[in-house]
Length: 334
Image 1 (cartoon, rainbow, N blue to C red):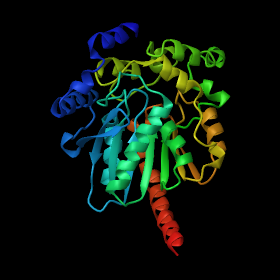
Image 2 (tube, rainbow, N blue to C red):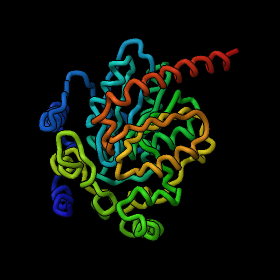
Image 3 (tube, rainbow, N blue to C red):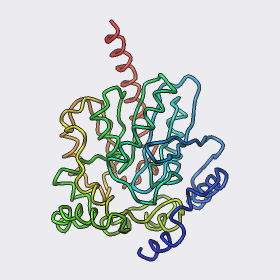
Image 4 (cartoon, one colour):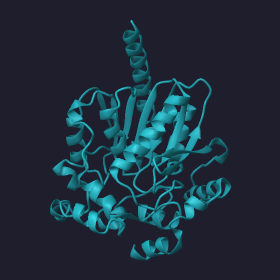
């Protein structure tokens, strides 16, 4: 893993940003082809927005008269187009979809793997505000893994959202969050030292394998997440010290118990990164309307690999939230 890190640092650190649109789509198509997954590049539009000093890549499928709008956030160091089947699932159901590459991810600006939770929240908020300006349809926030944590955090602070779709959930300030690392006993103590490391050597690259056991997570078309990480030039195999420090202790804007935005939680029962007992613990803490959908025998990448096993339940839930949102709007105008 350190060899892969050095390869990135010696020249690939900004490779994805330098791609033209055609080169970017071709690179994604090659990864999908290798995995035997369908990919219709003609469906996706690409554009950019600003978030502070960062330029963010958006991947978009716009439909006429959308039932709603979904802003989707990828997992750690991933990019939104890696979830192409998920984005098209929503588009096929009549939703306009905007996938966001946060800073340091995919084709967005910034050093690879270099960001804080506060910056992730700012980037997602910029994408939500852009969607609010363009469409009046009910607005949903969604995310996978790290992106789901950001989506959940934003749902505590933005009450106008129709709902939040979270593929796994976490409160990073909760002491039990060390259960999501490969060495909970070690990180129970190390998490309090990480902020010091992040302040002292903020841009120090730390391989994902230091705190996540990706070898144990299968991905359709690959032997494991490790193989995908090594083959896909758009993925980054490390985070910076300041990033890991933020991921170790950052609290949501408001307590999860105060959350009123409806939340749909998707979880793979065999997920090795987010243990079922931890996800259930966080789910119990969430206030307001909520639904937990567990995919039996699903792993960490169940959001991509098992779409038929959760799609109908998710879309039914979104229909309910759209109707409820419309009713709340009518009442607020009365």
